[in-house]
Length: 113
Length: 112
Image 1 (tube, chains in turn cyan, orange):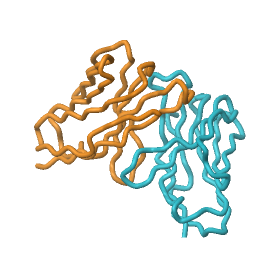
Image 2 (cartoon, chains in turn orange, green):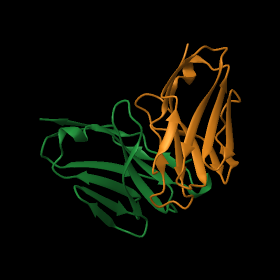
Image 3 (cartoon, chains in turn brown, blue):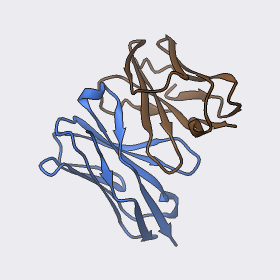
Image 4 (cartoon, chains in turn purple, yellow):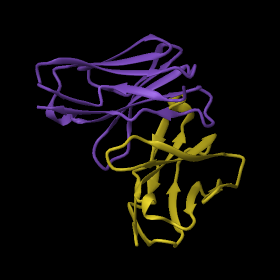
């Protein structure tokens, strides 16, 4: 298995809802990432998990809450989002040493209404 | 701060070569990458180059790295309409752990 799987592919949620995005990989990668991408813009780093521990939080608002239950899973819990949070959320994983080990999922397209 | 710069648009005719340029900021970057993103899709790794290399060729793709000028380029030979996409260069910054930092992306438009 050489893929990063993200679910759901599309999500529409209201500003008072609570939802979660899920990401899974079975490549034995020990680093996992959340990126946010607005239309026609580059992906922006949100969080980095290394060996299941949060190593980087790029000043992301607390309405986004990451969780790494085990080395294969990465979640992003969403609560009280704003319409400007609508974007493509990309999960990635890597072996943690650079080289060609970065693999991206196809993303969850989130719309906040 | 870190900034990876790319020209925003490139338009070529089918069969021509395309050259997409990128400048990066961190001279200690060990790996530099090119990703392709088609409309509505995720990111596809095209190729990467290690910082001790000057050039890497992979089928129709040629990557050139000028470390002195911190300049990276991607040449696509015999460009096809299926190559139309946004191309991002990315560097791995040591101070960002192992995370990738992306350039703004170059939109390649290929006309037949």
